[in-house]
Every structure is written in C-alpha cells, then in structure tokens.
Image (cartoon, rainbow, N blue to C red; front, side):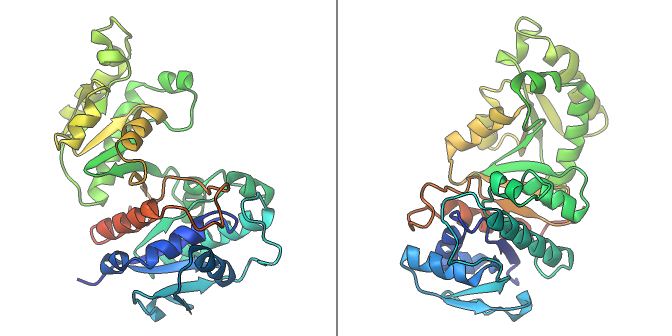
Length: 332
C-alpha cells in the first residue's frame, strides 16, 4: 500500500518545533509508515540540526510529489520567512507568530488540494500569534477558519483509548452548566460521525459528571436530569452508546477495550486520564474538517528551545497516528 503523505508545519521558529521535526524524521521507523513533507524555514531547520547534533539532506521542494523520501532526507517546502540573524530562541516574537501561521496556511492549502493526506502539527505560541495580529487563538481555530469548518471536534488518543470533550476551555463552573441534554445528545452524534470518518466502529461511553455518577441524585442531579435522558434518546435513535459511567472507572474500561471511545464532560476530566497514562504519547486529533489533523500535545517549550534536548516522542506519535488513519479517513 502506498504510504500516506503527511504535511508538518514547522511551528514557532523560536520554539522546539524544528527540533522535534528533525529528530522524528531521522528515525527510520517514521519513514516506514509515512512520507513526510515539512513546511517551514530552511535556515531554522539547519539550526535545529546543528543544535541536535544531526546530519541530514535538506531537500527543498515546491510540491510533495517531488519529495525524495529516504531515511537521511528531510523534504522541505521553504517559505524563507524568518531571518535567523535576528531570531531569539525561546522568546515571544511577532515575526515568529506570523511565520508559524504561514506554515499552517500552506499545509491547509496542500491538504485542501489533496496533495497531502493529513497534517501533523507542531507547537505554536499564542502570545506570538497575538503579537503578529493573527486573529486566532490557536491551532483548532486557525484550521477551522482556513478550511471553512465551523466547529472542529477534538479527540485524544493514547494506546487504545479515544477521548472526546463535551467542553474544552471553560471554567469548571461554566463547564458543569454546559452539561445539558441537548448538548450531550448532539455530541454523541458528532463523535459517532467522527469515529466513522476514521473507520472506527463500536460502543461509546459517556462519562459521569459527579462522584459515582451522582448516585441517583445524592451527589448531584446532572446525571438524572441531563445525561441519562440524552443517552437514552441516542440509544432509541440507534446509536451504540452507554452511560453515564463513573468517571473513576470509565477510562480504565476504555483502555481494556470495553469502549471504542469516551465522551469526557469537561477539559481536565479527559486530559488527566490520558496524560497520566502516557503524557508523551497522548495525541490530539482534530476531526469534522475537510482533512485529518493530528498534533503533539505539548507547547513550544521556550525554556529548552535551541538546546537540542527536547524529546521527539510526541511528534513521532502524531505522524504515526496521522498515517494510521489517513487511508480510512473520509472527508466531512
């Protein structure tokens, strides 16, 4: 089977993006499952190779079809948009926010033109984006805006566990208020569709909100009034879903294979479960878009940028997961 082509935007030039990219791409295992094209800056990539003590051929190309996909080569679409003589590693800079946005923008263009099969993103810095007057808060918003996807859906995957999120960046109080029957039902349907995009079928579990899923109102009424009615309605409509399942056990059960996915009801509920199990191999997948996107789940690590000591495990896993799902991915 032809290996999928995965596009990788280099990320914020002042962060660790270029370093995790070169470290990943010079691992023979990556080239066994994917053809990778980096969109970035040749000069920054050279600095990253030097910092990591690595040697590679930087093969500058215009089109992914022109790539030379060998273990000692890095195929790069060079946007030449950073002056490394003024680049300050580990610092917020408007020029870096602008450059990072342009790398993502080109990757989206390639994905929409079907010249690449998926995107695996590296870290960007929200303050650098703001300094560059980029009117997006982060990757998901950028990708949604550039692709025309109104509300991209986030899924975490680690080992055999997949986790969706009913709410993301809300205060805990606001997140609890957002647990309503209509929203839970909507997300059961959206998550099922997203799994089908990946070629995944099987039972989904909805996590409980309160301790022991509320114990029939002893510790809260959300399960009785909102969550259970949503699950029951979804079941009547033919969805393979159960819940609410106690949040202290549902993620373990998913790891054991009982459920293909879990709907987490707030940000930290699912983040803690996945990242405690394996922080570096927890990968974010963005769905409900015209293309597949995976991402490392760490930041720009300004404190160690340019030192060559960053771990590339998460980047390698993000590329692997993109390659895993790309052949089955159906565009929404």
